[in-house]
Image: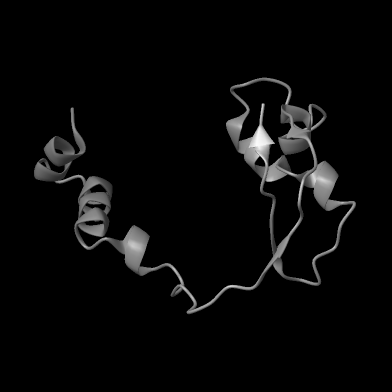
Amino acid sequence: MTSRDKADKGNAQAKAVLQSWAEAEWFTSRPEVPQSITLTIFKVEGEINTDDLSPAPDAFSRPDIPMHALAMHKKCASRHRAGGRRQTWPGQVL
């Protein structure tokens, strides 16, 4: 049974989800994108491997995608401070 079917049968939660999507709340509720963003760029010499992006102590298996996302660049970022600015890491992932 689809969300639409449930909404048509009176399910208030299904109606709320459909209305939220129809009004694009997932997009319109986000903060406005600033005119400019100041970044600190850390140039990576050599290759970046998956241990740099998502260390094993934080996420042990491929299905742990949310854990990987939270841990990205944790090891590298702890070595560098960006003065509160966002960081970017150009490089080639192998």
